[in-house]
Image 1 (spheres, rainbow over the protein chains, first blue to last red):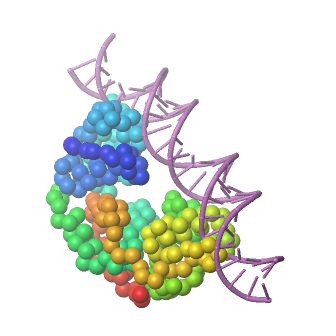
Image 2 (cartoon, rainbow over the protein chains, first blue to last red):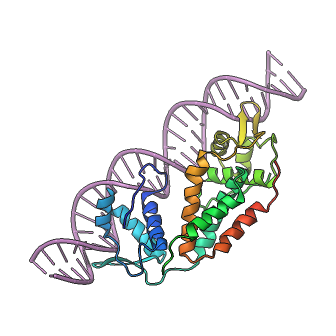
Image 3 (cartoon, chains in turn red, orange, brown, cyan):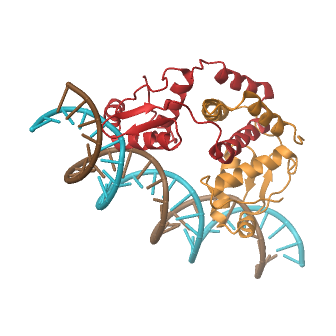
Length: 126
Length: 126
DNA sequence: CTGAGTGTTATACCGTTCGTATAACAGTAG
DNA sequence: CTACTGTTATACGAACGGTATAACACTCAG
């Protein structure tokens, strides 16, 4: 599982890790019940404190993407979470804000649809 | 120009103001060369410090959406900015992250396209 | 010219978040 | 027992968001 972090980004490191794991699950690089690196191992590999990795893992566990058990480690959930309040309350407004910004910058509607296709046409196994 | 702020949101107030102005421009509620409320007036109306409004206005000015001149106030730019590096470097990655999250939550592709239409079907005058 | 309105700049303060760091604790497997 | 897991608590420094006060510079109506 390859994973890189941009220390210069305004996006928090633990959020980058979280997104990267979700991305890997979506791409199929991480399959259900597959074991993730330990928080200490991944932290060491990324040059990041393991508490930062733990924060990302904890959030992923809270959201139902992975399961964590002390002594065993973390693994991808057997069945992935579906639409939940978080999507409606947080993701949708953020998307609309980005769409509006794109629109006011005269970005073509098809450009945005193409971005969706670009994401949805990638590997999809679960 | 109606404008509301959600103090409970994780999105910074000045960002909410910025987005709301962009939204108003996109909707046509704010037309080119139209004068915006002064930073003090809007701050007072929103129950927010005027420096917070100033921060939003300054960012909008940096991005080319409005112009500010001391003694005169702020007004919508005569010609709106087009696609710029900010869109490619910041907006696109954020969109992809949101799309990926939607995908992994088994949100239908059409749901996202519908959101785009919802934004693009609104008034558009400039 | 005066005064009231603009934006601009500087400084300070407080609370929260991010990331690091150290330490200790508790469960699992060889 | 040992070495690995995650878990919890605490602390520190840097950065950010928001408020607050003050002063400054410009514009325009009176």
